[in-house]
Length: 303
Ligand SMILES: Cc1ncc(COP(=O)(O)O)c(C=O)c1O
Image (cartoon, rainbow, N blue to C red; front, top):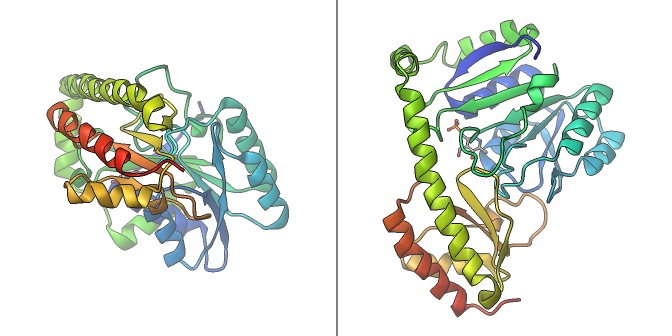
């Protein structure tokens, strides 16, 4: 791997803002996945940047579509979530990773690789980050999933040539990060307890992951739903083949919050999927919530 510089940030959100401020000016254009993470889009819009959207399928971002956008429009930056696409959970295939890197060298755009849930894998060893083999890629991650969002601790790993400009941006908005939490976490890592925490969390999430797979698999035929088993992460993306907004409203009445596709979709109007996140629910809560999902599904006719 090439040598990288690391900039500690107040989570991924600040990292994206810093990079966007450094690289973009109003009127520039960027690309995001057509179904994705709204807080990042808001950063681009706030900076007066034009956002183009590229579709996602069962191999992740459709790089052929990206290539056709690049043929028509100068793109400065591409933001994506390649490990577990947010919210569809799909891992970007090796073929598409190579294509993306090749496009980035040809068309000279930066890649923002948001690796928000890198610690949680259940089925196979994850692919190496794109940033390991591309000088154009900024690797971003944070402890928001590994610990909790309020810790506000993340980092950018990128080519050292960007370090000075990133530091300058960081000095303008927050100067530095809280050093007490960094000192505490560094000690936690050194004494081995952080590893223990990770192992424990992986066990806990794996248990929830398996419960959801078993439950959804048992419902598949009868309730006409479908889903791809994610390789990792903390959520499922389920095609309920029904109006997902109505489904979310029904569940809200029983105090179960579920995010319908429309919350993530930037292009198009389809809303038949829901994001079923399991980070914030323990096994007991999940066991109570899942039957409510079943009841809500049975109240709606499949399309
Ligand atoms: C796609 C994505 N990126 C990044 C993050 C983490 O953001 P932050 O580090 O600012 O808390 C999340 C958290 O939900 C996320 O879903």
